[in-house]
Amino acid sequence: MRNKMEPTIENFLAFEREHNCNSIEIEGLHVWALYRYEIHNAIKKAVDGWGGAASSGDEQAYTKSELIAMAKNALKPFTYRNVDVLFIGNGRRTKNVDTGVFEDIYCDEVAKKYNSVILEHPENHGHCQPNGMDNVYFTDRVAFQTNIAVKLSRKFNTKTRQRRTKAVTEVFTPLFEAIKEEFGPDLKEKMIPEIVDRMYYVDITKKFCGKILDKAKPKLIIEICYYTMESYAMSILGHDRGIPTAEYSHGFAFPTHTPMQYNPEDHITELPDYELIYSKTQLPIVHLPDNVQMLTVGFPFFEKQREHYQALNPKEEKTICFISTLHEGEEISKVAAAVAEAIGDEYRVIYKLHPFEFATYKEKYPWTNTDKLEVIANNGEHIFKYLAASSVVVSARTASVWEGIGFGCKTILLNFGDTAVNMEYFIKEKNVPLADTADEVVDLIRTDRAGFVEPDGMFEPDAMRNICGFIDRFVK
Image 1 (tube, rainbow, N blue to C red):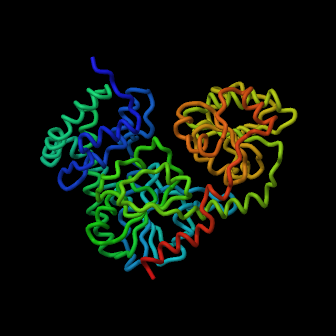
Image 2 (image 1 turned 180 degrees about the horizontal axis):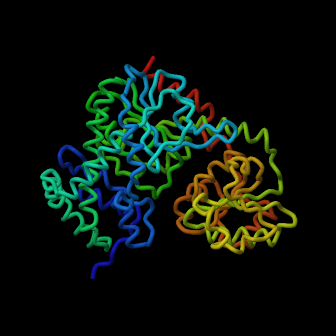
């Protein structure tokens, strides 16, 4: 019997190249490319037990009240004409604890400098308000349309659904057989209906976005997450209409994050023309097709917040901040508690919970109930407050490591999960130590051997000037 391949990103990319997956078109859409993230996640979940983000088939249904609110937003007309920049937000807004305003930390401040509009789709079936902006358009109409269209097509098995199901089945059956042969799991029955759903989502969204572009006529489209339905649609339309498109990164990418890893020859219209990243540390990590131009611009929000929180929270030499992660939280919490027990009389030891742990940590992590460990749950304070005050950050695979370094913290990585793979850049290039036990962490702290990385290297300086300089190439 042939040995199965591990579902690593390298093996997945090799599979895509062998089968020319990203060139597959059905009804003018590169359908594999539109669902490759979910396909890879499904393989990893079947093989390893965890596969990242949930697929569209796992999403919760809208409630009646949510659909009514969505319908009301859908009735609002689009009134923006001849804008310079059209932003496609990711729907996530963060509450500013000082003002009470929910901010889009990627779009808002940049958008204020231009004749622009921000498209915002419902996040968690709604929108965070007040948002302090006068140029945000909720795209509930297309979310409503796609939600209803997919439900009706499934319920009545419409002719369009039958046609698409037949085409997807013919094209993808050999691919799913090859996946089963090479990786192990049989995904065909589950994923073919979901891929057909994705065709509906993108096709309907593309028609909606086309009408938006007819009115807005932007000179540049900036997407915060290129692999949302609206961004896919706008990238396709941008290529068709000669409108430049760019993704502005909504975080730091990891080398195993499927959407940021492609073979260089995969030139597809669903991807943007430009990729705007935070720092040069991402250049050896992100591998998009070679026709997508990578530009380092930084992150204005981080620069502003760092200045704010450093002014209020002077760095404390003997403060250590453990940062939990969604999948390694239990292991990290045990190390944090053990370190606090060992040196908590001498050091301030903080354990910053992941938001998904707020409600359950007392039951799941009873060992954190000690006076020597300061557990930070849902207290309304931003993590930046603790990064500003800390001298050492201890965590696993998380973007907060970049942020901690940006605040001037020394770093210790914990060898849990896929940290050794995803944080390889810091371990090999920057000599950040990788610890297995609480005793190792204590020794690294006591002997001052936590890794120091130049803070300015994490975020390109003068971020607002850099981003505006990029935009001005197209709108001035």
